[in-house]
Picture 1 (spheres, helix red, strand yellow):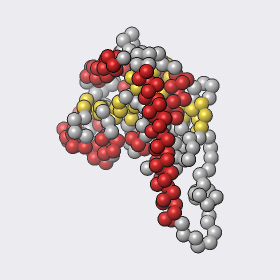
Picture 2 (cartoon, one colour):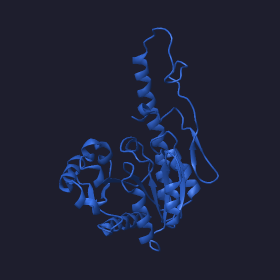
Picture 3 (cartoon, one colour):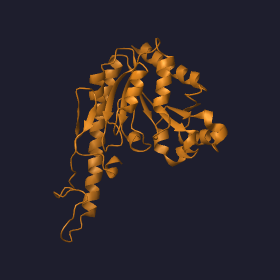
Length: 273
């Protein structure tokens, strides 16, 4: 899991700045014997089996702690009638462009707040503020995903109004974000036609966790060797019953079904209140 890529530790390490940005604190990870990872070990002590057991235990602890915080986030959101979406994809699949258009087209109908996750910079936050959204930037440093603690602190800073929509734009990555519940109501995964039709097969856990899959940048289909039927069929095998919507945020193709899906989810949540 995420511990293998080095972005998970025993305790979440970071802090929220006054401007609403989260920054990961720099720190070393020890291997249980007082050594930094990557450091030299003197002697011939073979502790591979012990290290493996510790990694598995650590992974379980990290996920268990995260799940507890995610449940708390979910309760907090539902009590306020706030629809939270976890938006995930590989880098460059079009998450921010989709959000920009959605915020502009739905202005006056839905209040959209955004939690922006990136390793560095506030470039996407600037774009979303220009689109009229309240935004909190979360910079993860070396971390490859958001976790429930980061989202909890970001929600406190964002302070979204009741009945609004909060979109959590996760760090671009098709692996680790799928493992971490953030307290969202629904998971929306983007697959760009520029990435190739095989992504659902190569990254099944991500797409299996999705409530909705948006196949993005469809305006480029005439210029690419992308088999939309194959991609849709593979998604049906990996996640039977998942909703798949082809969409182009720039050209506006298929954008209405996406808005209708948003409206239905928001109305369903409101009816529970």
